[in-house]
Image (cartoon, rainbow, N blue to C red; front, side, top):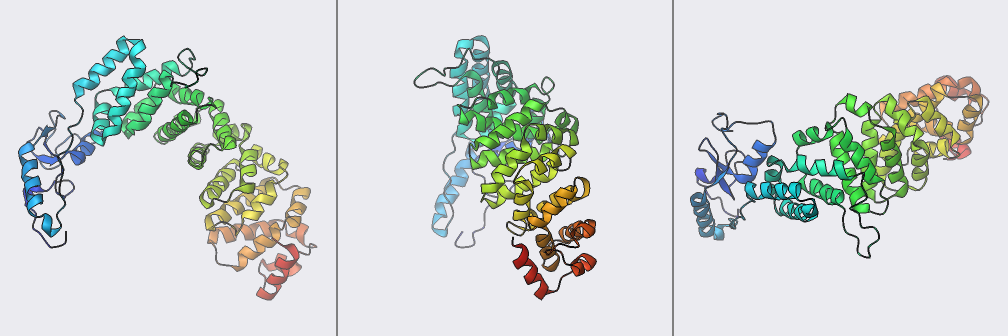
Length: 429
């Protein structure tokens, strides 16, 4: 507001302390702004009135039209002082309409696509509609359709000139549109012992439908982040195969980031690291790192690679790849502090657990020793510097005769600035 205007206190929502745009009254008689009280109620964690702390006997919201008109009139009178005008809000969808659509789709399979398209349209109109859809049981019904149809091809139209969505693809787009709450996501992820994730995995296999793949990835990412550790560990190998394939396909930058987030989350477990390695994760990440210029994606790839190199199979794949050690070394001091930290962690794992004589000598030829020495002389994270020092000390004897690792460096792991410049020129980057 341009001038300080005193807002009548009964115009203000008790939750947001902002002027109400769509005032509604709950069962305790207190009025709130619709968006704020819906988020309070439908979060699934709070079933009481924010002001009185009394339990809510029901979650019905009654529009307070009289108060809304007073607020609109006051805003109009004070518009010259910079007060924003508040339009009359569109009423949210009625629960009975949602129930009818769900019932119609359940009883008439040939009407399912039409009903799902209508549910998607309703969900796209407002956050209030999305919350009403959730509270009306739409999530369970739509998730059940994804489960029952994801393995079927009878309702697909791949041969048509203008392909139509299959039922499970339309259901998937509705779930994506809903932006499901955490409580409902937990119900979905535990449905039939993880069958929902398996259904999404099957949808990822449809290489000709990028939109459905994107929706499946988004939902999968959300559900995995509310899954319990035992559920994460039990994820099947097929999931990792499809995630790695999406990385290879490079559908979009967003899809790549989503897959990397999922792999980072999943690979905190040792069992899942092996599954990801067996799916070709190490080689795929290295190939992508070679040409990657996006800072954030590079960082995420190095985090994934660090996790995968936490198991023997991952380190073996890294060393087997012709560009494995080279690309990791190249990323030191090229991306960010995080990128350097991850690269050094990878090299430390290799040096500690998988360093054969050939590998140790290769680290000299690739300039790894020079990069590690440089890290000791510049401002970087303490843990990163310590790991670099450990690597150098670990192989001091093998590197003692190398032109890139003078004896005084091996002895102290510290190099004076003039000699540091010479080392860099000798070993390159």
